[in-house]
Amino acid sequence: MEFSGFTKEDFSVFSLPGLDERMTAIRELIQPKFRELGSFLTAELSTLVGNEMFLHIAKHARRKVNPPNDTWLAIGPNRRGYKQFPHFQLGLFDDHVFIWLAYIYELPNKAHIATNLLSNLNQIESNIGDDFYVSTNHMKKGVHPIKEVNLEEILIRFKQVKKAEFLIGRNIDKDDPILKDGEAFVKLVIDTFKTVVPIYQMSFSN
Image (cartoon, rainbow, N blue to C red; front, side, top):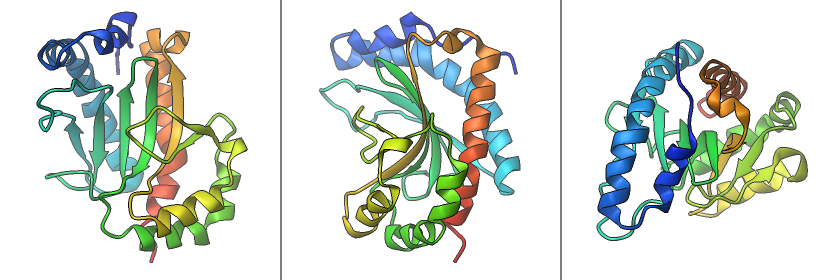
């Protein structure tokens, strides 16, 4: 697909004060790119996972006062929503793009999924490159290089703590030249999803 990439203007959206002003900019600048990217990525992921996947673009509808600090698209196995399912995310904070396989706290069967992932821990660790990151809170910027974390401890906490989350994927700094090269960026996103799709499939293995 032809994609123009992300620009400094896209990231500057998050410096705009006020909910209405920031949401207007998100709708005008970022969401058209999400729709373009999301349509392509949804088709790719449907092929990769072997089931129909559905695109969701964050509406931030619950926000009444505070403007969002990030925005994203999500792709998951349910037409009506994504938060209660393992899903794939692509989005922006003010300083980076994130590409995740995401398990967030709304999942109703976290313990079962965590057990599946823990039973495949060696396979996960052997297939994930050193340029991948892990997050334990999708609402915060803080991420950890995969090579610097104890993945088993993170998954055990994900299993045992109700609000714990697990996200794995890549983060790209806003100044990385790849963000201006749409073709290269899309290839990186697809490569990231191809790498984590086996983990997604492990979620449903038992």
